[in-house]
Length: 281
Image: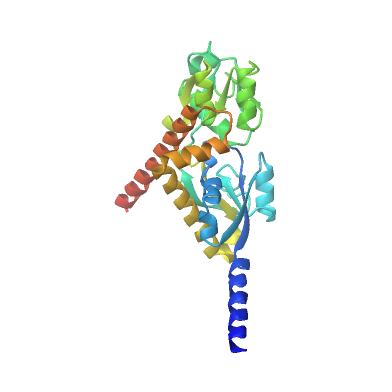
C-alpha cells in the first residue's frame, strides 16, 4: 500500500511540473530575419527548457500594440510597438536582441542613388513603424527633404513591399533580409542600409508593466531563452540556415547564408556596445 501511495505521489508531482509550465503568446510582425530569435527559441526547445510553453503568432500593424496593452499578447518583439519607447502605453522594453535596424532602401534598376529618388515613391510598412523612420533618416542623410522630395506609400508587410517593387508599383521600398538580397539578385539596387547610418534597437522583447510587476521570473526565463537562441545563431551555421529555409521558403540558400551573416554581425555589434558601456562605467 505504501508503495502504491509513493507511486501515485510521483505521478502527481510529475504532472504538476508539466502543468506548471507558463503559457505565453509572443508576437512577431514579419517573417524576416531580424525576428528569428523567438521562433528559433521555440523550435529548438529553449523556451520549453525554461519552463515556458509558448505560442508564436504573427501580428502586423497597430494590432500588436493594442493586443499587448489589453493582455491578449504576453510579449512583443518589435521595438516599434506603440508606446514601448515613448511611454504612451503601459508597456516596456525589457531586452534587445538586434541592436540596429537591418532593413535596406532598395530601388528599381534605373535608380542608382538615393538622390535620384527625388519626386518618386517609397514603400514603407505603416506611417508609424520603423520602416518610415529609417527611410526618412536615409533620404535626409543623402540630402533630400523627406517631407517634400519623396512620397511615402504605406504598403504593409515586407512581402507585400517586395511584390510592389518587383511589379513596378513603387520606385523604391524598405526591405529586410533575405528579401533585400533576393531583390538584388533580380537586378534591383540597394541604395543604402539603415545599419550604416543609424543605431536604433529594432527587435527585442516588449511586455506590459503589469507583467513586469507580477511575473519578473517568467520574463527572465523568456530573455534567457532568447539569449540561447542568439548564441545558437552565432555558433551553428547549418542549423540556423536550415531554420531560415523553413521560416522563409522560396528564397535561395545563398540568401539564407547572407541573412545569417548579417544578423551575426549585428549581434557582434551588440556585444561590442555592451563591452563599451561596461568600460565607460
